[in-house]
Amino acid sequence: MRRPASWPMYPAAPAWAQRAWWRFLAKTWRRAGAFSCLLPPTPTGDLHRHWRHPSLWLSQTCGYPLVTELSDKVQVVGTLCYDAPGCQGIDYRSWLLVRRDDPAHALADLRGRVATYNDERSQSGYHSLRAAVAPLADAGRFFAASFASGSHWRSSLAVLAGRADVAAVDCVSYVLLARRHPQVFQQLRAIGLTPAAPGLPLITGRATSAEELALLRASLRQALAAPSLVPARRALHIAGFRITSFADYQRCLTLDQQARAVGMTVL
Image: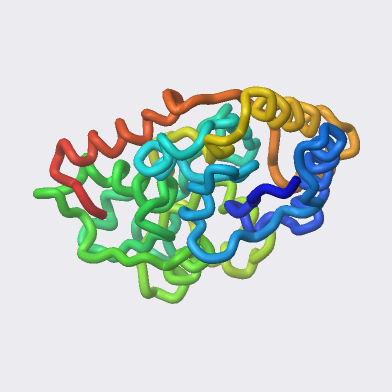
């Protein structure tokens, strides 16, 4: 049986490691007669629409859309723990990146400058940055302007090119991108971190049964324990798995509400 599935959130990760990870999971599902896909398919069209598919088997989304758009559309499978600098348990932060020759030493030094972000729905690129600058805002404003780049990679390039002065790039994306594009990230530097937020949740559709949900969680635990996956886990910086729920992601809403309370409704 084939059901929609994807592994879309860290495209900078080594392809061989992603294939090894997915093949191991798919093998456990196939043995249980649950799913026949061998490689993580790339969803076509709107990813947010893909996540809403009632028969979704497994995907990884972002904390902010989980609690604002998907709470009645999906079930939470759990959250992977990563070992990249800036991660702790299920939590992650975003590095505040500027050009290496920028005189700024702290976020406060960027008042009146230009920010870029990957997507307005992104916890790591947009809402965590908004939460970080909210205490510094004056009448709800801090930056002179901000714009969407479309991805953390494009945000990094926009800062390097001088089209923006700062971007918030989550710590997992940062370590993966810096390994793939050292020539770019050697010309950038971090001046701080955003507040911690729960990392990317793994989700399944509302049609997934309790037995299937248990299978998904068991397969992830097996993947974390499999000796054959040690190289892939290291390359992907995956260090653990924890069963989580919507309640764990209420912190995303709390950060949003705290920013709104001081008048910072937009970045």
